Every structure is written in C-alpha cells, then in structure tokens.
View 1 (tube, rainbow, N blue to C red):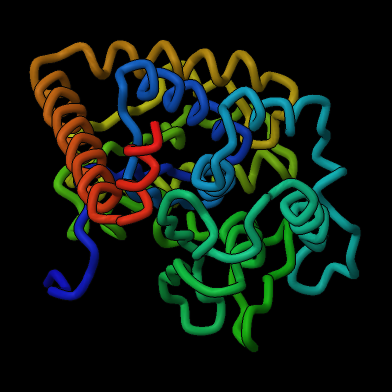
View 2 (cartoon, rainbow, N blue to C red):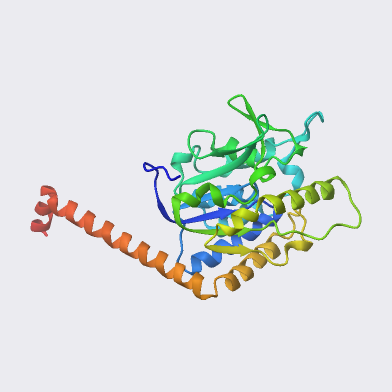
Length: 297
C-alpha cells in the first residue's frame, strides 16, 4: 500500500547486483541519457548500489569508469581471520570515502535506496537516509564467505543479492515508471570450480529465483546480453562489459512501449522545467529589489 505522505516520482531506475558485471549498468545509463532520460530516484543492490551511488552523487559516467580503471580485486579487500568471511570490506569503504562527494543520503543529487540483507534476522534491509551512506553501500556489496558481515548500529548486514538482487519492488509503488537493469543473467555451469566460481554459481542460482517477480514489475526491462562468459570478479574487462550494456540497451528501447514511456518522461521533465522557470520568474518580479535593478538597466 502506498504511503500517502511519501514522495511520488515519474521515473525510477532499479539496478541489479552482479559483481563486475555491474559495469554494464554504466553502458545502459549512457543510452538512457542519450534518450534524454534522468531518473528521479534510484535503487541498487550490490554492484547496482555502487553504480547507483556515484550516479546519484552527480558523477559523469566517464568519471565513474575512470575511478575503477586499473583497479584489482585485492585493492577492495583486507585479509581477515576467516571466521565469517575471508576478507574485510575495508577496501570498498576506503574507496567510497575517498571518492564520494556526499557523506549522507540527503546530500545526494538523486534520492537513492540501497538494498542489503539483514544477517541477523534474514530479512531485506533498505537504507535511504542518514549518515550511513558508505556503510550501507559496503554492506550491499558484502558477498558472504568472501567478506565478513558489515555492522551498522549493532546489526550485521551482507550482500543484498542474497534476498533481493533486482530491487524493482523497493521503488515500484513510488514511481509511475520503473526501468530495471538486470546484469545477473543466468549462466551455464562451469566445468571446473574454485572458491570464486563456486560463490559466483551460488549467486547465479540465488538471483535467478529471487528476481522473477521483480522482472514482471518493470515498465522497461533491460537484461544484458553476452555477460554469460564474464566473471563477477573480473575487473579487467570493464570497457567490454559496459559496451555490452550499451548495445543491449539500444535494442531494449527500440520498441513502441519503450518509446511511449520515454516520450512521456521527457514531456514531463520539460513541463516541470517550464513550471520552475515561470515560478522563479514570478518570485523575481515580486522582489522589490529586482524591480529597482530592472529600472536601473
């Protein structure tokens, strides 16, 4: 049921988890921008929360790509005594703190919802306000076994993909239209396994089961083609992965339904912009000082 006091948005983006496959989000966002679209709210899980938080913070897509260029997996981890995980996610936290312009949700340019999993209660957790911006994104990316849970206000959290890898339902009731980008496309099983491939396979299976309903909730669903051969831990093929997202988005938006939604969103943005212009003009004309200045000119 919709909260009558809640903000209602014309267009929202839901970005799925998928590890390094999340670079495809950047390619999709580029195409959406080329169509003149800008979300009024974003929600993301895991890799989707990483892409989403920088986009919500006002970063250009090229800037986001540049932040990750040359990075290696080891830069985002700290070896830990393997109790609940092999590594601590301190590297991710440091990376976010060093690069994000905002320190809390309210400072972001676009409203943003981060999805994690409450490790203690086994429930979906959504963060959208307060000072835990960095911690929430880190928690959303905390892959079980690989990373130890992240503690926020005395509660332990892990990767949101465990229960909600494609967070469309998180903002569905808040939006007229939702564009969902799913990078966690189900892949064929490996012939040989190691610990990383085993964990990746677990997430393939888990995300397949917990994204079915959310796919149906999208007004426009963009599922990235060609990612089956990419590893969720692969940070070396970010340009190729982003290109796959770009090419898939072009195809996904080339139909009558998508074109109608794009047209309506662009029309809404134009009307909103015109209204703000007129409102500001009226306020300026009511200002005695502005009248004095106009007479001087």
